[in-house]
Length: 430
Ligand code: 0T9
Image (cartoon, rainbow, N blue to C red; front, side, top):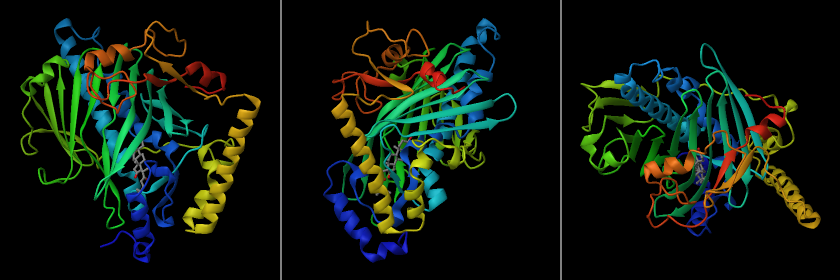
């Protein structure tokens, strides 16, 4: 079966051929209209918080002060489990939502430099409002930075991501760059989250979809360390979107799987189960950990296009999106060219006048100079270096989740950070 009747037209076949000989930048490929998404990649940051209740859950558990000293340890584990549950809950949104809304993975619009996407979730009860600030901080290569903040619970998630890709016979392989930092200000606790590699399957049948692979890590400032291993519907395991997560007291104890405090196993797009210790829990005898299909995602609220600024994603791409919805190939090309030419003009002007482009809400911080001062961080001292040390993770601009002393552990160490002052100076709130 083919994913679309358009796939029979030959345009998909020629697209596959162009993939096979591509130069590494997926965004530069001209894809047939039926595989184009009317949504820009700068919007994908919203997937981090489609379950705002789970994002703030760790803050709503008893604090170490509230718990007696004998249970402080148990409470810290509970928080690490809560953060792991939040992270697992983001995956269906991040990697399945295009399939659900549009029938397959689609090629997103490639954000222009300075493109922004803002919105909010208005959750009731003790969760309260959560805001999203997403900004395209680099165009070559594409990098998106974001912050998600909940004022009622003093929770801030910030991060950035970019990709590199390569082609194999049946799939496109993607490495993610960047990470997320989740800070619970009341708890004085921060979690470093790394991003897993992925690949795109279903190319032959013109019905592409994402599968995760490899490992991602969550390192807590209190020491707890989560290792999440992904696999798909291969020859080893039977099911798609499978993961196994183990939470350890610290990175050192993870050397032996038997040391795990808890093990969680199942599908991130479906049900997963949790059990004590290092052995794999089974669905029949174990406690349900998370059911992705029982928790509908909460979509953020975005201003109507008429009220948006010219650099806001949905306003800037409105005409392109319309052309994509109509599958009007010439119009898509025409409207896209307008944006591209405008961007070229802007860059040319900047070169001529010597005025460089400045990012709006994010700054790049260089971690290769530990003495270097920064006034742009929410937390002082900056927890990132400490968390990478605890987790034995590279501090460099390596593929996300690269370990210290691995072959990628070298080069620059520049990471994008949210600048709350700049956000507030823009009249924005949290
Ligand atoms: C960060 C996420 C990322 C972005 C997307 C690879 C991909 C662009 C990057 C990594 C988010 O937090 C999570 C989810 C999906 C990722 C996208 C899936 C995808 O296919 C695209 C690439 C650029 C393509 O569009 C390839 C072209 C086409 C053949 C696929 C339909």
